[in-house]
Length: 111
Image (cartoon, rainbow, N blue to C red):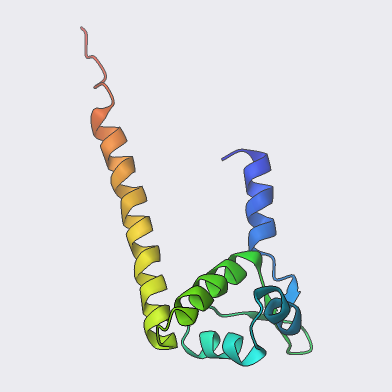
């Protein structure tokens, strides 16, 4: 990861959006975002005043949940699907790392 990548990641995780703005950006209701929090799909940070704040990463997850719900999937099932998709992506990333390590040439041992 380069320095530029790490700054982008910080930006992704920074809780910059209020609940109202997040709902507006997603074209959904604040109640929908609360439901995602109750289902523990996303956990927004709280401002000093106790207001929910969402990051870009959380908004991407919420947008995926909205896609599934709009297709008729119940919200609890949509949350479970997203969690499983995330676990699968992580497992594939780990497996790819193992594959690369096993394909790397073995260090030569010469005396």
